[in-house]
Image (cartoon, rainbow, N blue to C red; front, top):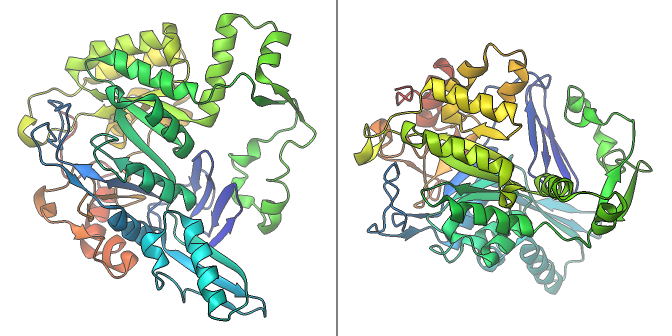
Length: 473
């Protein structure tokens, strides 16, 4: 496996596993021998779902399978625990290049106390440089980088205020080019939280609860972070085909492309103009301006709604889609993502899964009205069923991916323990997890642990449908 990297993109090349990752936007493309081939699993996690607070949540949603509540006991993962877990997943290494040409890699991995107090990658580099210089070494350069495949972390929180290290964790991950994202309740989104989120994350999901107005306001607060009428925008004017970046030719990248074509994209085929001048010169109407601003936001940041797909909430889902067409607060919304109801805990069986007919109605409405829509992995089977007879079914399949637990992603709870996913936690053979925090070698002790491999095999043999729960009823 070979990793090619610059400031913008990270490309992984091997015979049967290939990826492209955009460090700024979080856009990720995976393929096998060709882009149409999907590997069965990755050699190590691409995405980590890390819960950093649990137990107490002021919303007390009646369908919460985690059973967090206002009466629960809050437990937070510490910043030090997060860093330990992060570096095990990311396989962080240090390479020191000396002026005499000597190169040493791995010798200083976590061996200096700078790893304990570092708030970002540059702290480690600066400390090591100072330390080695004082010891008499002549250092030319110090590289701190990840040898693993980790590209994104989904932070599991009860609220952005419960864990005091939440934003510090996201800043740390971002400094290592790992893109953070998280889900928030609309009522927790303040202007300050929106500003910090926009600066750190590649995406943010907002839960739609009973008070949807707060959720709509949250979208607007996030969107405003990306609207500056005095900013310059780039207008691309070209007939050249740049689709090879994300289509069937992507896996044919040459080793030197990182310093040539990728960094020189669109050269001579664009012009820059101040946003407000573009609006005035083209006499854009209010609706046209809103559409332009919405497109600018969506290019830079992904704002999604998360809604639990239950029969009781069908009317709310339909109304939310109608509001997307008329409510100006939602112009920056990327998609409405439907989450499968998880029949687990004390509320198991008290709610009905959204019917296939209603799934079909939702999808048809979204398609007809060009509303972005998505589905979590648990919903993928019913989505695939609803589109199988459509002419564009092959392209629509890209909207959802079947269960990827233990195949491409890993879940870790606030105690630093992993189970296949948060749904499986404390269920069946997973009443006890596997400690990531205490493991010595993440790949052998966790990712290739026999228990993980057994679940992975069951999942693949079940066509990537959940092997532990019946999610159809």
